Image (cartoon, rainbow, N blue to C red; front, side, top):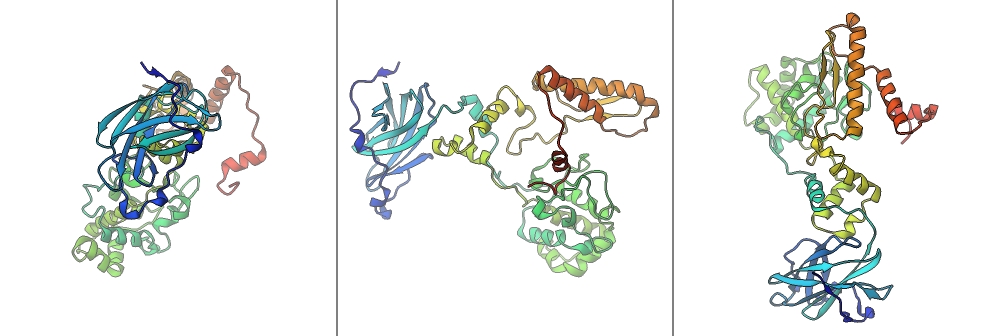
Length: 450
């Protein structure tokens, strides 16, 4: 049990001061054996990790080192509210873990507001002010799930099926090929025509357009090196083989193996030799495959930037309270649902927030068979009742219209989706107004709005 606090206070509140690191000589700097919030005084450097919650006991992990001498031996810990001129009701218990390492347990902040953690290391005082709110509390299991969504960017990995994956010469050759229009059959289309760098390496069109319009939209290439399957249909299991497909598609770049090989031999022989350690061979197909592998090596370098979630996730891992507070409370509430009762991690896990598989797709086949690729396990009823309703109405539609359907895949009819949405909202007592003309225009176009 925690010991009830005696009238003792660690000192008058006027004595609170932030670490005066500028008074110490740089030559005396030291590094504490802990990653966390860092404080510095004339004689010591301290780092601590804590995740304080209002009305709950919590612990602080502390490490300190002396700038000139052996590790410090003693530590006292307290928490005060300078503006209210009082502190905690409980005295923490400090346990020595190793030279210069401690754990203080039994701290409790009884109200939100402006607090200060006070550390006294071998008689030298350091303090860190922070504002503690009624924020979102994540238990240890939730923290573990959140931390599993990182770090970002993840460590680079090589494709074992591509011998030049990750090599600088192949990356350089792949970048030149990516922006070379002469790879296309007519000399006017390049990879970047559809995978536009300033549009996150896609084109913003409802359907991709190379030499002709195709049946699907252009996917982004950001983080493509981390995927397991490629193409909307998963038709390729390596990035280099997928990179060859648009070169040969008559609707996209309309080239063939001989054309690509001749372009490489005529324009990029030096880059090819640097990447593959030999001159381009006589086999057109072999040069085509190597062009795909160089393109893949370049695309593996296209990684999206860090997000506010990534900063929050890293701060949570190192218990950096100040950095965690920069993540909006609304986002934290959504994150708690995501890793908790929403059970979203069943499918959306890891740094990419995906299992890399196909899911939540309903396909209607002309002979009346309903293929459901949705994984119901783990999804809450509020989600799955809509999914099951969609399946039931889709099956009914197949039965009613099956005689006139061709043997191909059909989208679920929009009126079915609209009806399910209407019924769902009605059961929840929610009414949705019709979109204004401006709203409909904004949703339908990349050119409207911001």
